[in-house]
Image 1 (cartoon, rainbow, N blue to C red):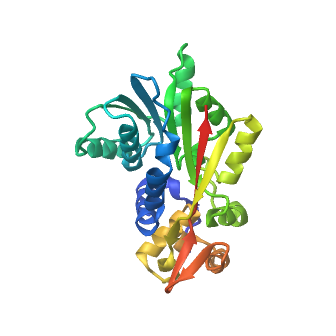
Image 2: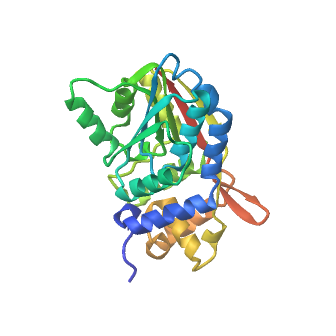
Image 3: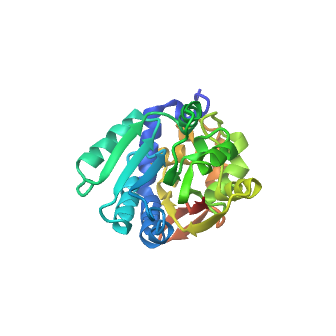
Length: 292
């Protein structure tokens, strides 16, 4: 008898591997790179005006690839200005990778790095205990708000940390993506985990409106090649299934009717496009820029 479905987050190494397969099979990082190249310079154009040091806070900085892209844009905008870059990241493994990346990257001389192994709410609690809150010139929260229990309170807190001309950049899946449809239709039938919640840019902009916080939202198309998900016994497909459903060994533990239903939907236009024999899941991203 097959074991029952359980959350992917309960098996850390499998989660890490399925996430790696997601990055390998999607245009996620290319999509972010495009935003950093085309839009970010205009967004950060005034964050360091009349400042001798630029303070940047990375919430959920992961292994640092996107962080370093952001830092290079800030350096280009403010040549020679000292940058203080602090990273809040709960995974020790990711912090180690981030440190290794910094060690082998050139032109970081004017940047001071500090890492804090904690979640954003642990950081928030630690800061609240201090009498004086540190202000920041740029805060970014990339693909991490799914792991926050109280999103409006988190947004309000980090918004209160913005210095003059400062901005927050939030990246998460778009309300027009396949994720939105997948979560709305199947969320209640998949093993939920306290660690993660289904939230898209549509939910987030609603929260920001309710808080009366000003923002701009940009959407960029991204896709994930899920063709292997339709090949029986394909290891890559199995790991992508896990990532899509946030379920450990979904392919072998899911009730057959549930799997058949999701399999059919994943090929529908609202979820994916078919191109040159491939099935490309809509992984579109929203880039939300919050003003001070």
